[in-house]
Length: 218
Length: 222
Image (tube, rainbow over all chains, first blue to last red; front, side, top):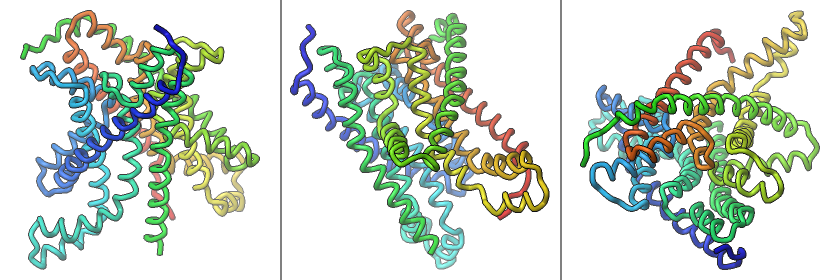
């Protein structure tokens, strides 16, 4: 049954933003934990840990996000776990974000002069305290801008969860389009919604980058 | 839990290879046309009239802050409402060109801005011909500056092409979908396809690294 595109249809798309935001938040929080682990492994002194972390990063940066979603979704089914699209999408995007944040943060840890860590070690600080009190606080200042920048990429990436059936903005627009056959309004509105979420974050990231650039120049 | 069954995947392997070929040629064509778009945009943004600059800024911000999936749906499903109808593969190419055009404009601009005016004058003072100045003093160092960003943009683009399967363009992912629906071996099919994507990205970045080492083999002066 095709019906006209009404305010209710528009509201259905707009309201679905909460699921886009929820999925982004879960993936970002999970990715922050995973990313920190990956970054620490990657910058550790153990050859094995470095190789494992580098392989993980390369695997996720060298394959399409869509395949990562498919493999998680079908892979979990394959081992007998029938999970909802929400769980599969959260897991896939968490792993994806872990790899990307891990690579970004490794660069930030490497940017902290090695003398800092060496000085802390010679003062007798343990690895934990060296990282927690000396290296990570300095690295985190460098990390803020690119991390916020990646958040935009992640939010856009959540749209792919619609392909495995998770109802967020994109899937809501498809459903509305199937019922109303007004692709211009449905896909136009969904683009506006994504833009309204992502654009302020992009501007924030750019400002932070500019501020960091002037801080380091001075 | 079942045993992995790769037989159906390899029976249809030629179909996957056709899809992989579409993925590669689509990426190369899109990046080529997208570069033309982005060079035009970068020049217009540096030297064009104000309204044109605003328009280009709007284009860049719009594309960078919306998902590629929304862009391709809009181009394939919404534009026919305005009378612009395209086949899936053409719509996929258009969407990719529009997308990469916006992302590469900033890269090209960085390249243009990296050219030192003093260097051009120094070249002229040394008696280099106009073509030599353009080739050796403008193009080569500018290319060197943007080369890493440009090649990672290409890899990123190639990974994005996997999304074009949603409008039934015939790329690698779409080939996987076909096989999966016929043989009910989704996990195995996508495992193999993921491997092919990984192989493609690793080989392209390997080739890019060799080209970089061969072409820009002089030390960086500052």
